[in-house]
Length: 408
Ligand SMILES: [Zn+2]
Image 1 (cartoon, rainbow, N blue to C red):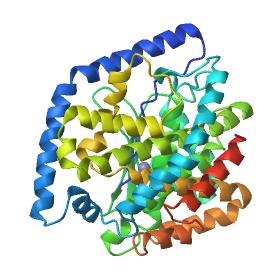
Image 2 (image 1 turned 30 degrees about the vertical axis):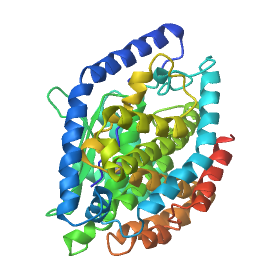
Image 3 (image 1 turned 180 degrees about the vertical axis):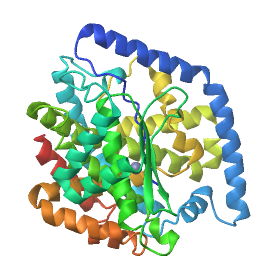
Image 4 (image 1 turned 90 degrees about the vertical axis):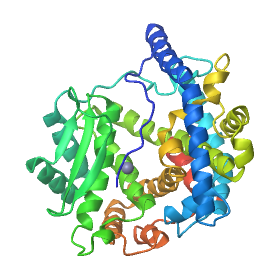
């Protein structure tokens, strides 16, 4: 539980032309690596498709999507709800994302963004910390501002040696949080090197850790594993709640810039998540067409054009057509991605509510976290004072909140 999504944000954000050239060179290096292994990845995916089709047939289900939705215990929503969510995100968030991109281009002094500009933080790079002690102390201060009990819990994990946050030679990449059921304590693993993104990762995993602690007392271990959609409300929500309290790392202006960037990233992420999911719905409900590599890439491109416009990909069409291969979920965890979009909608609601009535928002969140898996997904959202939904109205409300908070 609690594995965090990994974004392709470059290591440093830049605003000057020489840095932009460097960013482009880095992006092109990565793209060339993916181009080199595309035939291999295509072959691998063809084999996965065959195996998955056989799995669905063996289970006497019409297609692999039906099989996978059962395996993922999706009781609160089905394929039609996901398709509705894609449409709603296309209608409500894509125009908003366009405005974020245009404003970001202007802040970077550009007419239009190229793919290598997407991770650049207007205003220049941030280096919030260099040592783990400073990272832990600063995050504890941010959590303290959200709720003093979160800060006490985080410090307790540090005292028990349960925060392994910094990168070092030989250490695996990635970040996650796991329950240690015998002790009832969570363990947080990360590979921080001093970037702003590393700080956000720790806030995110901190949200998962507080969730784990809230339901650690349940005698039944499986009740300590809530639906992943709500786990990610805890993770993504904590990123937003704590990102406004980074005074241990930044001055007031930079805090405001970082908090704003955080919400903008979520606005950009929701259409991306919808594209990844929509592509997989296409793949597993059209097995014959999906077996053709060119048709498959074209289907991805159609989703990317629809949901992720506003970036200049000219001359990079082949890289754009192969973008879906950069998402490990498509290979290893089919259909596991829309959870982040559903959780993102909850996180926006939580953030909005916490700005208006912080004490009530955090108290309700705590109560919802403590339910663990002893409530249905919509009821977990409701216990936290949030609305669960994949419909147009829910998405429109979240988009309106983002528009207002970002003054778009
Ligand atoms: Zn997470």
